[in-house]
Image (cartoon, rainbow, N blue to C red):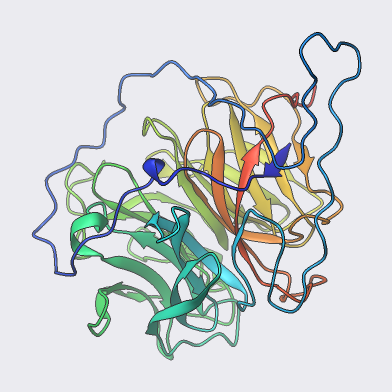
Length: 388
């Protein structure tokens, strides 16, 4: 179960720095890191939660106090840090704000990159011209591995002629990093993630042509690994090529575990929604399949669970997972009735207990007056996984 919290310390985030273009990233190697012993984070005390008095037994916990409904763009849920946005397609924590809360970057499908923090009007970092007439637009966001020093963000966009990755520094014009990703009548959405080793992961759609996803010479339908300038990253399985895996149709999210041993990509495949564990070569059998097609999107790979946001139904799917990355039971659903945040799109892990999310209620859901929103969610350590 995932529940909101009022405050998370900014110590879990990186502070910002000055804007400048980075030197070439240090060489990285595609190799598994030593397996870390998973350990769940401490369970936070949630606002309004009942705590038994010393010696009081048998009563159990009471549900949190209800949160008043939003009034216009004012949202009373203490976990919300930005309101009244358009469909949110990317989120990334960037440090602390002036009040000691969380500041973040967020992208909207229509082309805006925003800096957001609680009770402050969003600041437009960049306004991009994008083609959102199909399933594309501005659909992916990731930060430089050295964001604290260079303030660089990477975005995935659909243009009039192609899909591409751009690099953005505050106050500077966007710079193309990776261009020529095929564009089609569908399959244009792409997503980004840091590989936590200094390289950028890029998941691309198939441009409406499954043959392109199987074509090793095409950038469509692939998971790519590139450096900060769009070149194949050092240490890729096949030297000189950016392609790691192939066979995607319409990716929704990319996420990497904190120990870098597990990479996941969600996809709207031909017959079901799926999540794959990314390995070099052609993507094999899905690690989990949703025949009911909930619209899988962003994800977060924690020590013992994979969170997956859903954009066609409210909430998140929570897949219990062992340290090797095998799922050990059926997913449970958080916020199933949509009363907390409704339909969700992007997700970015903050630590082993919390993640930043963006909502997509304006894209077919039941938006409240403060939608769409960026918020922090935290899992309840007392929840149990589903059983086989």
